[in-house]
Picture 1 (cartoon, rainbow over the protein chains, first blue to last red):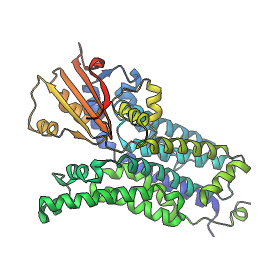
Picture 2: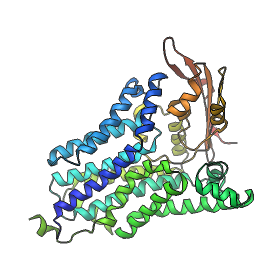
Picture 3: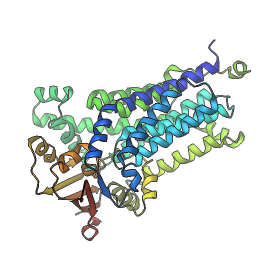
Picture 4: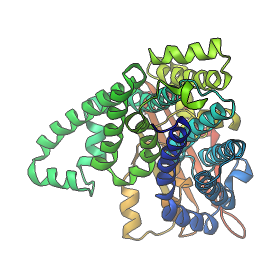
Length: 266
Length: 162
């Protein structure tokens, strides 16, 4: 039987891999952004001046990646905790920096980092009893909260009647599902499809806001399929946004909580 | 239920790290849930998108709350500068699904709007249910390098939507 220690390392690395996939997908656009922010600095009175600096933007991003990658090899729990704390701080800086506050990758990365920090604290404090079950539940709570934001924001007339999705995707989005549908269907049919697409999205996001109420394995599968579908069928760039959350979602699929944890730990 | 087990751990085993995390998740979820019903929450969300939150610290806390929703944002940008076709195409799309100020702050639009080095006027409008916010901004070239983004508070209006 695989020992609990190995399973905890595996859980941590699955989530770290998801986070790294999301962050690394931003590598190229981030360097383009850095160059433009240096060429065309924008000064405003809302952001503190250090959060308008392009260097801060780059350093915070590189720190988040470097620290996360380092945790794949370090062995000390206390070092892991410090690295996790610094990763969360770096991701938070990106969430409030003038050049990156709107990038949802850093938002999902931040909450994934919070899960990692919490998990490290549990390990350092020797709170091993039932840790796998707790970790999966906390992951589901975080994903549910993020989907709740998505669902509630769509409780508007524009989403219910399909106008918003029609304008974003069906008019001229250059991506294969929408190109195919534009070839196959008339404009009025596309409008009808957009209505049901929109209502299905609201339903799915509302369902995913309740993951924490479902059995763990079912919740993980629903979350994984929903996150994958969001990126695969609407915009592949969104894999950077959903990557960190997919890391959290697969925990409940790949890890089977071990009821004999006391024996294994002793 | 799984979440009840977490609360038991917090209560009986003094698991404060889990307690703090659950508390923050509850606060964030509560703020999100009030959005469709509370005018205060709707105004906070609109102000957040337009950098009109009274304090940066409050805004920074709001950044931990999910914002992947449309507030029916639109923008106009007027400038004396000239744009090529690619930029005109980008500017033709006047709808933005979230964080409309990114039209000037984020690198893709910033490059399009500011590369010609001309001053400009930016208007951002957002609506959520019955709340409507319109803000006006001046974009001014700086001596030396860069631009200043200046809010024109006299023209800012937060009103019930027509």
